[in-house]
Length: 335
Image (cartoon, rainbow, N blue to C red; front, side, top):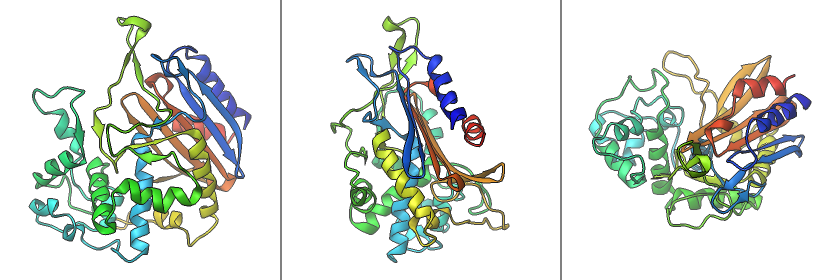
């Protein structure tokens, strides 16, 4: 534990107290044993980061999307090997089936929409896009980057499609489905998918990039995406610690939704990617390490678990200088 605490206090020592920074917390045996908040949630308003600060989680959100999908699988609304094209006509131009599991574990071969956005002429960094616009883009694609279920390639398109699938199968938007199925039973009232770019988010954290040429030495990132599924969630350390306590409870229950998310999902050649359904599983020093990370607009997020030690480690940052390092964190946790 001391090595982990040292890791975060050392990171703290590299960052100015009046700039953007990070929050970190450690949960052991269901109890918070370490928490640190350093820097500012808003440079303009001089608001410091705290346990209530709501960070943009970026791709960390994918595990919650996958949990919503798996809850529908359990209800019998769809099966893992069902072709999602019956519910997603946007995939018609590919002229092939896509098993549900191929979206969940990134083996679909559907290209990542970001590569198409980034190559658009006359596009500016702050230009807005949302799920509707990305679905229109996916609708125009017709070629996979590899035959489906033969390889792994991380693609945000998969989780945009999964968000749409949840809405069409459940009759409610992803955000409402997650709130009712995942968060309200745990009395988590503030964690949420941001489905409306005009929404007020309590204790919202803003992100920054160092820029010596600007007043105060930073420029603010202007988030241009309002997509949900691949990202879109805001949450605080307080909320995530509550989620992690439930995560370890579910780890102890082989019949839980979590174990459904972590089941191996082999490719056609029998190999099993480390990426399962919204979570990645790797081995370090004989221990399972389960995690996902996220990064966008200067935000960097990591939730990492070592189940055998009943430990969760959370790091949320609003600047690139405080990016998480999975290998260093795991090494410190196992020290």
